[in-house]
Figure 1 (cartoon, rainbow, N blue to C red):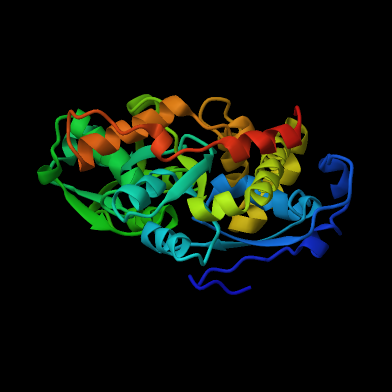
Figure 2 (figure 1 turned 120 degrees about the vertical axis):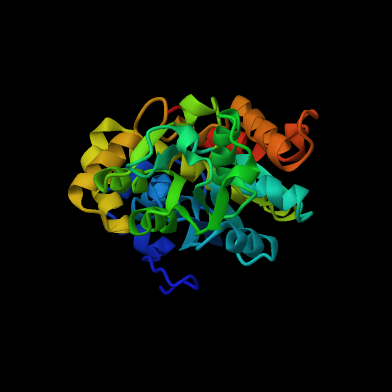
Length: 341
């Protein structure tokens, strides 16, 4: 399948996924007739954070729950937000700060319904930079200037006493574009990167000044969101989606599946074996990897809102109520369907 973004990926249909050897044993279902197959369009950034989605497609977790998922990549956060808002895609998995921006800036009624990870980001700089203070007057490479991982970087700089008018922003695009910009152009002094791009950055000689979890504390990074009207109208479908995703996370991070999951990463992201192995190790890190069952981190989301409030709204004012953005009832029902893992 050819993407509108110029990237491609194999589209595994519901029927095709059933042909995967042994997939039936991976997906316990309640008794009763199989659900009617429903088509879903899901948009994501390229990256290893999508391992559960790759797993759900290739191992049959989606198809066994009657879901025919078309997974496509985005070039940047503006494209992703616009496509969800206009209904071209029903679900997005990305930094959930994008969902906050959709609601607070663009006025779209979105709902965050599931977690994923803490962003797994590290703050990378050029090899000649030994500390954050050396970034004053330099260039920060970002996706968009006012969402998600750009705000992480801006807060890291602000905590070090470097104000927004003391450095330049360059809009480069998604993480896969930023790592290339950092390697190809040394004037790009700093950016946020997660695996496999953080693995590639270290191999190219870029320096990590620390993980987000160490520099900023708890953070709800990647998660899933949809337009609230669509979610309310398709509750049972969304519950099945959450159940399949939860089961896929469990399979993907299980030690017994390390070799197969690593191969899946290598194939989907076109990674050499050593990079795929290091990426899988990062994904299964108990502190900074994929969160088991894709649970939502309420403390981490509080931090997302506080950072956004400090940098984009009214510094010092109370952060907004998380309930304005989050509704986990579909996730909780999906978790019940998935059972104990």
